Length: 134
Image 1: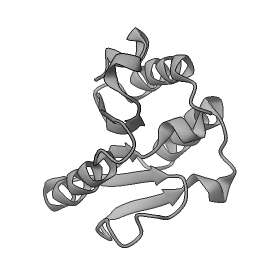
Image 2 (image 1 turned 135 degrees about the horizontal axis):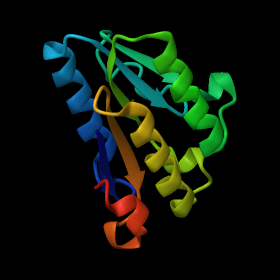
Image 3 (image 1 turned 45 degrees about the horizontal axis):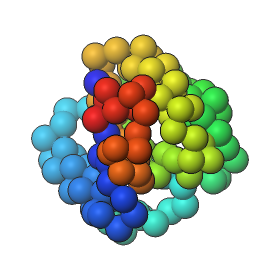
């Protein structure tokens, strides 16, 4: 399942995601992973969630991001939730490419893993391939 948190810059998307992670960590029986560009959330999310900085692994572009997420999931079958902050920064703000990435991730995740993604854009600017997940 994929869930998008959509809004313009400064609209509270990351704060909402932090709250979701911290709440989920209290009740979720499996592992939670938060993927971000830079380590801004180090002190905001609970220690129970695994925080991963894609900059440490030189992840650039949607293809590399897909492979990175697939590798994380392959390495740990106990992951039940993945949070991805600032996805457009990783994909050079390519909204059409984001739709393709979400379709590929949807097939990969099936119903086993919940994916929450923050998207810094207005809802009316999103192509249909992205909007269907919002």
